[in-house]
View 1 (cartoon, rainbow, N blue to C red):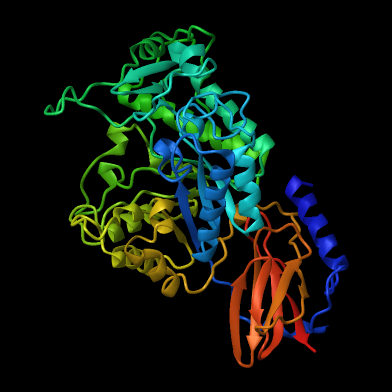
View 2: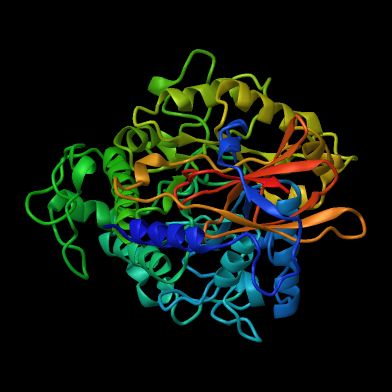
Amino acid sequence: MSLLSRRTLLSSALALSACSNLPGRASGPRLQAAPELATLPPAAPREFRAAWVATVANIDWPSRKGLSTAEQQAEMRAILDQAVALKLNAIIFQVRTAADALYDSPLEPWSEYLSGTQGQAPSPYYDPLALWISEAHKRGLELHAWFNPFRARQSSAASPAAEGHVSRTHPAWVKSYGDQLWLDPGEAEAGDHTIAVFQDVLRRYDVDGIHIDDYFYPYPVTESKDSKTEIDFPDEPSWQRYLNGAPSPAGTQGAPRGGVAALGGGPAGGGSGGKLARADWRRQNVSQLVQRIHETVKAAKPWVRFGVSPFGIGKPALRPAGISGYSQYDKLYADVELWLAQGWMDYLVPQLYWSRTMAGQAFGPLLQYWRAQNPQGRHIWAGLYTSRITKDSDPKSWPVDEIVGQIQLQREIAPQTGHVHFSMVALSQNRRGLSDALKAGVYAEPALVPATPWLAGSDDALPAANIYLGSADTEGRLALHVGGSPALQHAVWLRYGERWEFRTGTELSIAAAGLDAIVASALDRVGREGPRSAWKIA
């Protein structure tokens, strides 16, 4: 039996032993089991609604370096409360910006975007990732941990590298490119180190997802501001070892695995020399790491979803008519279409950072493109450039109805799928009334995260839910607690006469007047809905 099976069986047992009146609480309206009502409400709406919380350069959190622990935690809770108010259901929180850590890591130093000094822990001490997970889960939000797999120093970094940073402990793995440092994807030990980082987080933290962004090989830089001549990434030592079949300085590089080996071209190191062209070798390096991350996640916690958010324009040879622009396949060496075909991810969030009418990169055709490259039926969730909405005085700002319209178009193209906002700051600031418009329109009703059934084992039991209904307050509202399982998300239907109202959450405040029935269910760790329970209000 899998870990998920044991966990869900335990939650079911807890739910079945629960009762409607919890000890130590004032008794509310009497509830009468009414199983005949369980099938009456409609299906729960499903849509992944998330926002990236970027820590690099203090884009979203913390708002600046050097905030006190109390200030950092207050900002964190405000972001999560805003997410709940918007009826989002997930946060994608950046925990590794440049071979650093927004958590207590034994492998990499504390990020400078916390204190201002790389390697310096928060004082008074706390573990940001642990608290983000705890506070998100209290609010019924999923927390996906977001990593940059290759960047080792970002342009805005100001403090010197800490003693334990990879640029000091393993300088041969690190290359200077433009005004940044990068782990060389051709260095096998650098990949092993990154995999160890993922394993550590999966072992110690109750994350719901593991997420990587679009920085594989770096975006090219040019020889000068006015030049169009690109500087090649300086990976000559690892490239020559590949051609010569030589081991890396610290040991023997591992051969490609599984689907990556099918690309051909010989081993990455050891034995006979490699046969791939340099661009194909670079793509193999990236593909190998993506495959290994996927395998690592599934070996550690099968229910955790692995997601990738690449640049939004696909491989030139496969693009539909009218689509043009930058090629991540040729410049970033990211063969995203291969990863989808092999099923090396559970969800893809292409960064569709153009308007619906943008010539050559229109939002709708790009979303359709990625949906067509999906033979394994993985989730395709649109990445929205929400931060393109800026100040009222900015003539280049998008109007609010561009983001609202993109969400509506996403629903028309692919109902019950989802989207992710870049980034949370635009929503928290309610730029141009964006958050108000979302709450009044496309987010008027909550939604559950779409299920990921391919991650469920055949013997994984589904959780059950129970409820407690408190007494009405002076405003005629009831406190509804949904429990009986460790589920992050619960679905609740409230019947007022002929009308069913859908809600999500664990602690709800609901109108008492006219309420005559409640139906509730719980979701398991892969989003499957358990059996519905129903009660009449006596």
